[in-house]
Image (tube, rainbow, N blue to C red):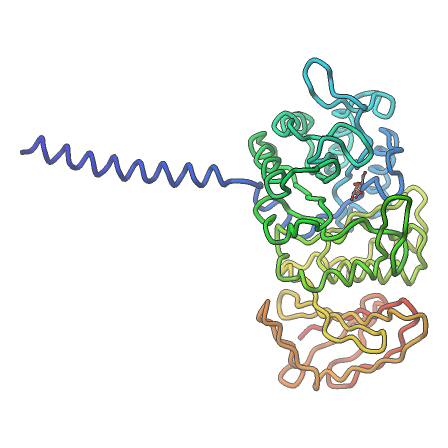
Length: 414
Ligand code: GLA
């Protein structure tokens, strides 16, 4: 009898153990991205918008040095990411490993990564889910685990993963495979999906990576489309128009990415300010894309404005929404932590606009975040973030003049 009851107990325990093992296995099998790497939108510099494939060890070192000395690092810019063009045209014929271009990176890539790390910054690389990158270098298709091990061996911190030469591939499967490969390689690497929003990554990529592109490439124009031979790129406002419906998908550790910044790349100072303001309202990753060795003081001031960056980096991680759109002036609102709000009045037209906003008759309830702005119940102080001025409170109607293509951005605090 005693013997029998022990046997039964053992069988029950065995079943329980089996169940626990199954659950653990299922959890591990589903474990994909490293958690907690991007609780606020990543900030850094990426080579593509200015340099395309003309990159080098010297460029990285100069950029790293400047990011430390010009205040960018202190403002929060952390990642230096080499986009397309860092590789040789072929993999190693014996090992199959990727090879950094020996002309551009004569001492290999590890030295470059170590240099960037020695400055207290982090380092990222680019590849593609398809068989070739967009510029024709070796893609990762079929080499996911090998490439992930290679990146881990270099100690990189960020991987941007593109979608060229991907005919016949399923985006969710391809990006999930790479995400799992990165997990398996056991190095916490931010995984930045770049399939241009073609396969609605916002609907499935939360567990796969920390950010996903929502559109095709950005262009250094304020509005409209820039057409090239076989493709086109989107102006800043064109991209803004594609973001409003996506806000519910973004949050800490999983961000909508409306593409890298074009600040300092040819738009006017006002347009650069507007571009940067809107990216911060949208909780966008802030990857600068200019040549910071030749940056004007105006571009530097825009990119390092602490008050504006604080809106982007707000810990609540709630993307703004469009509250009003009238006569080419849009009003965007972003709930912040501690009950604060950011508001951005955006003049999309090429004429000056006078605006007035009565806080008390514009009570707002954001059902997504369950945050309320109510100037009847509460009084908020106003700070004009670009002008660096306290501008009264919500007892009075707010009036201002908006120059063409410019913004006024306020922080409202109880
Ligand atoms: C695609 C991406 C860009 C850049 C280039 C590199 O177009 O969307 O951001 O990475 O490829 O070839």
